[in-house]
Length: 336
Ligand SMILES: *Cc1c(COP(=O)(O)O)cnc(C)c1O
Image 1: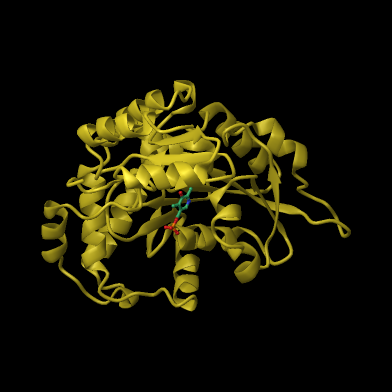
Image 2: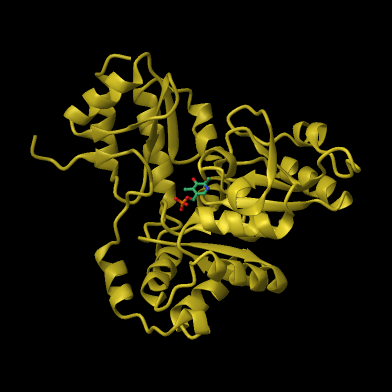
């Protein structure tokens, strides 16, 4: 085996391209805790603008961007509602409870797809003195553990209308909002409209090495900036990272369409229903995921077990169409 392994475990494995590295090397930097890092200020402004919100805040991770958003909306002992497989409740290791004293209930879904009636059925906006009151709802677009699912905009709008009517805040975990935008053709501003706060990742399919941005109102972002420092994530010369993010937002959004096409090639090879592949994530059912992962790795393709009977394949900037075709051939030949 002479070829480098094809890594489909996650779109977080991407490495900066030569052009992105040049942008990073040339970044003008200053102390961001003093608000004096020009690249970071520009990134925050540009992403807020793209998403149609007033202000933005650079964070080292998407988890932190989400957790800063949630804590602005939910006081200790109050309740957040989220999908049963939401990243904020499954993959952030209990952060909402640990750091913010937030209790959580979840609604069930098919592939993470939002159904407003399911949210309204469990919401308790004014539970009174004996029950927990719902004060925030989290929506994830695309839905990672649902399989890269793009949320139906009419259901998003229905949840937002319900929330507004009952004084409930709505946070969008938009780690892969870029993918939702490219797959649906819906402008980013429309996808981000109606949410109190929105987080987006620069280090997934966009290929930046580090970083997310939280956007929202000036007041929310100012409060999140204080909490970011309190959590120990006030960083200094972040311009090198922000430059990578700015480069990614300029040059790596439209090309996500290639990742989506490559995901469909992989899905076809594994007899996965193409209707379950909205974007760059493929879930395939296999009898023995551990064996499947090991045998794929032996043949130069890295995939991840997610659940007792499933493996996840994610396409990204570092997976070319040729790589996808080769991986498809390898995976199709493995016992399932
Ligand atoms: C990756 C991801 C995040 C953020 O993850 P970090 O590793 O903390 O940057 C948040 N939400 C979703 C849906 C994700 O897939």
